[in-house]
Image 1 (spheres, rainbow, N blue to C red):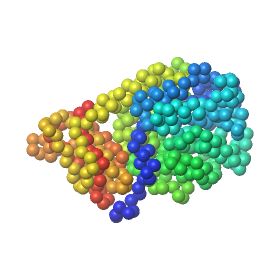
Image 2: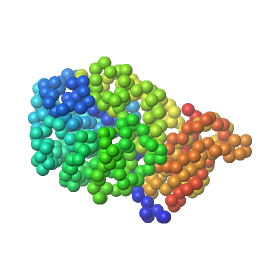
Image 3: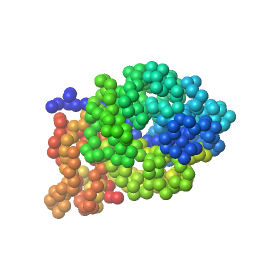
Length: 411
């Protein structure tokens, strides 16, 4: 096998994979009804976030080091967070800002001002819309909604198509993908139609290991074993995104629910098994019924990201741009090491199939850890070892192994 037959990422996929961290914001009519899935019958009169501050959401994401933010413009209940022309079931029928508000606009503007990339979630399943049972009528309806979102809010980093509730339903994906390609050609497409990124397969925020970047299928949703039916032109390079809520099993905010907030240790473990397995982490932090992110959630989020920065912001030493079967990392003196972060140069495909990390101890090379996939990033942790030299040996590869960076840490 040679390089020519390896799947390779696009420039847009490479840019997205380098982001590593995204924030999900589930917000909508459910926020005011103490529920996760509305049935489309809740009155728009309930939607009234009297202190909504999109800049607080986005500044929180930026402070924590997140590169992009995805907002649920419409969840399964069909309530729209922008004043769409397609239905009255939206913010324009709510008391918020006397029906003159646009949550999508406020979040888009805040992201642009703060330098955070913006993405949108638009549920294909719609439990409110009367024309949903009529396939052709609803395809027109959904295409109109999508066109509004693709054309009115600036560049989008990602368009998120949730497969929940759509078992057995065939949407007009050729048409939907045509709209995305026409209006937002650089946006990543999540898991349906012609995806450029895929769902990792769970809502725990963790990836299996290995989690290769090339695949021809992925699980569609949590509720069946059905796999996504992708269009034939879907690329072979489809990296995974790991989504998880910061409150366990709670995507939307619920009152008196702080006990479900994930512990710092749990979030650290999620990071190791998402970003550390070569994937992107999409962490949900849900605004409350005031329209603000809860103080407890912000505090835990900042604690989490501060700990990640403490561990990995300052490598003891690193090397960049190496290639071949062996890469040596030399230290100025004997030093305690317990983490190594390796990044492959995936612009040329995922070449490395297996590797071993070794440390020189008393003149002998000692095996620390073995692995298979490196991909965008692999975080290896092991018992602390004192050494002056580390070595990465690639034991199996397709063509010449290309290492983007190799760095060591003591955490």
